[in-house]
Length: 195
Image (cartoon, rainbow, N blue to C red; front, top):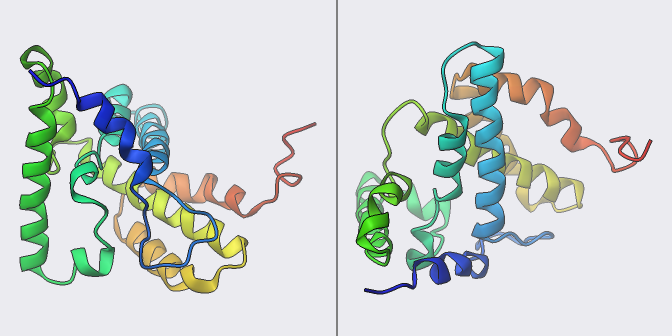
C-alpha cells in the first residue's frame, strides 16, 4: 500500500497556472484551489442563506479544494489548448480521469470511498455548477489583480471570463458579482480594514 497521496497533494504548489501569460503575481494550483474553495463555500452559503435552497456548504468547499488535484500528475494545460476542439477536450478529460484514479489508488482502501467523489473530474449533482462558477470566479479575480498591477496581458482574459460568468445564469454567482467583486477594485486603504 502506497501512502504518498498527501505528499503528492502538497506538491500542488509546484504547478504554476497561466503558463502562456506574463504574470505579475504568479499563482500555483494550491493557491488557486484554496481560493476556489473559499469562493465555492461562499456561493453555497449564498444559495442556502440568501436564496433559501438546501445546500451542503462543507461538501461544496471540499469538492472545490480538490477540483484540480489531477493536475499534480497532468500539469496545468493552458485554456486555449484545452478547449481548442472537442477531441482535445475529450482526450484531456480521459487523461484527468486516469490521473484521478491513480491518485485515488494512493490512498488506503478504507479511505478511497470518501475521496472518490472529490477526485472525479466530472462530478455530477447540484454542487458541480457552484464549483465550476467558483473556478471561473477565481480566474476573473486573478485577471482583476493582474490589471491592477499594471499587467495589460490579462485584459482580454478578464473580458472573456466576465462574459462566461454572466452567461452561467446562476443567481448565487450574480449575487456575488454584484455585492463582492467591486471590493476587488479597491486598495488596502480603501477596504477600510484598519479602522
